[in-house]
Length: 234
Image 1 (cartoon, rainbow, N blue to C red):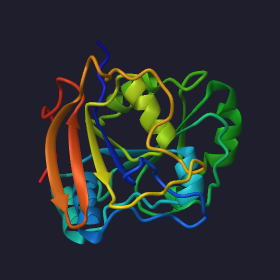
Image 2: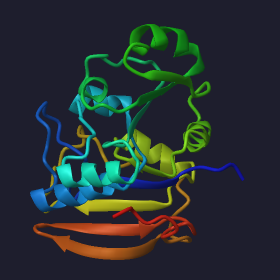
Image 3: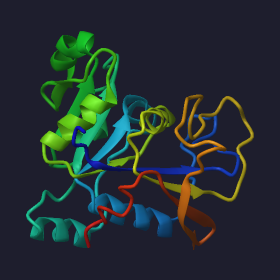
Image 4: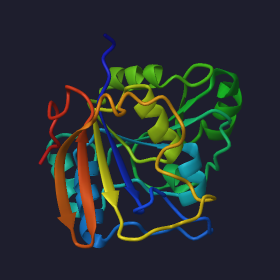
């Protein structure tokens, strides 16, 4: 079996399963208490992965917000922030996105084999571009991350990445936060898209924790026998 990082998926969604609405403004699905919880989870990971569409749409920073948590990482001999990782087939990403420009931390871009030359020309100044196969193979991506010393990987979206990690059987844990409202618009992106998921009526995922955090609820699911093998660092 090829070594790969312990992989947790982190996601917020509406009651009816949407990650966002259909407007240009970002929909806030959580609250400050849960944002702080997510910050603690980030601080305990070696790398954070998002899809290229999330970079284009949300322009995330993907940094640890708490100065105390950054200091604790440094005290453990780690960088203040986890490694940033993205996956793309077309490499249609702006090199001035905050993913690349914010935070003194390494950035990895896994792209399809046929896009590597153009990806290196476009992003080689701001990130390390890695051939991820054609099409990009998440088994190769996670094995390469493990070889680079990533033991704990946090996947923060979007829906395409969540779907691909889940259907590939590469997720060990799902942390799903449900916001107390409906979006009700089929044009909006959903938590996952169609796929052949390992968990269905005949194989139910294990609910490991339910926690109310203000007006949202956190559901933690154990998705493999590795669940609990790697707890986040304090």
